[in-house]
Amino acid sequence: MNSNAGLVIRQAQVLTPEGELQRLDVQTEGHRILRLADHLPAVLPGVREIPAQGLTLLPGVIDPQVHFREPGLEHKEDLFTASCACARGGVTSFLEMPNTRPLTTDQAALEDKLARAAAKSLVNYGFFIGATADNLAVLNSCGPTPGIKIFMGSMHGPLLVDQDQTLEGVFAQGRRLIAVHAEDQARIAQRRQALADVYHPELHSLIQDNEAALLATKKVLALSHRYQRRLHILHLSTADEAELLYQDKPAWVTAEVTPQHLLLDTTAYNYLGSLAQMNPPLRRPRDRAVLWQALLEGIIDFIATDHAPHTLEEKALPYPQSPSGMPGVETSLPLMLTQAVQGHCRLSQVAHWMSRAPALAYGIPNKGLVTPGYDADLVLVDLEHYYPVRPQDLQTKCGWSPFTGWNLTGWPVVTVVGGQVAWDQGRVDPTVRGRPLSFNPRE
Ligand code: DOR
Image 1 (cartoon, rainbow, N blue to C red):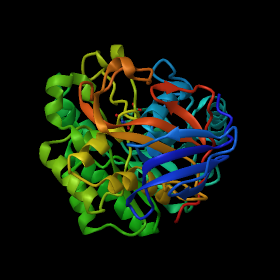
Image 2: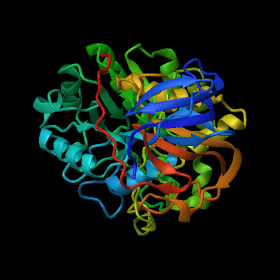
Image 3: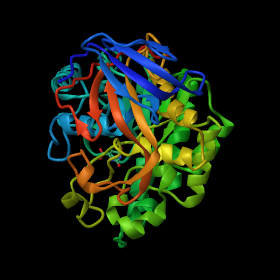
């Protein structure tokens, strides 16, 4: 049981706000970071000491795009199991999407999710409000929420916003951040008909092709210009869209990429089959290379997992009945830290992309840095050893990962949420609870 009286994490390599590693002691009090010093004095009774020599202390990860399935689809995942997976993965805050049952399209559904998370989530939480053709009137008044989610494609039912008039209506009204899943539904429908008699999951990347993504991203970029509206492009997946943003990326537009789109490509269908199926789909090796470059050069702002669990039974259905989506919250940080250790990027960039940049983009106060006064959302990782992704270690209810067998470094040893130890050397503390996030976004 966590008393939350305070922690002293001793002699970790701490990533400072300047992006440097320094060997320091870090003390927390309540849910905040109290102080950092070369050596802090012996602590008072009740304060827990965590010896951390040889480990690295980073700000907790904010995963700004997840699908946690509660309410309504709890056979795939729920807020407890998903947040346990977060704790294992060093994810201390998440922003969750509205395609649950009922859909999160009004204040009552939003409040229901907030109440469920307060009761069950080990980590901090926020929930998007989904746009439909009928809820324009409430989109800018519901809250608290990080923003409005629009599915332009790859969605069924009321959350599919594939009519230009509805789309423009959302941009024209209000000032709230709009986060877009940018795939053009008309293009997808047309490609599906043209390729109707092929039945391999690889087909997915041909039907929902680069052009489908580019068409949609172009459209929302134009709307964002017209209405000077804060736009976030979710899971950018193609070289074509990145090249578009190199030409035209206004200051009020941000974009994210998933570890899947950075680290996997269409060759993954050969060994993963429909486990590799997600929306937007995996792309070709060239897309991956351009996405990496765009991330390194700041055209892409941050990383999200799009954690979208489905059961293995569901995934085993023949394409196209097999659902799209992969889990991600418990592997994203080690995947990216392994990239850093292997020299593809810097440790400080990983922390920026996974903690600080999403906090800034969504205006989440006091998060994403290890500094006094900030929230004690912290992750202590081991960058010395490698350990493989194994199904039996997974906390996600779906029980599988597209990265099974990958040998990774940077696994969380301890994850701290608001000063409480949620993950401790291989064990979740199921009594820990996160808090609702607040949002003061730039417009
Ligand atoms: O692959 C995906 N699966 N992409 C999405 O945008 C939705 C998600 C899901 O909810 O399964």
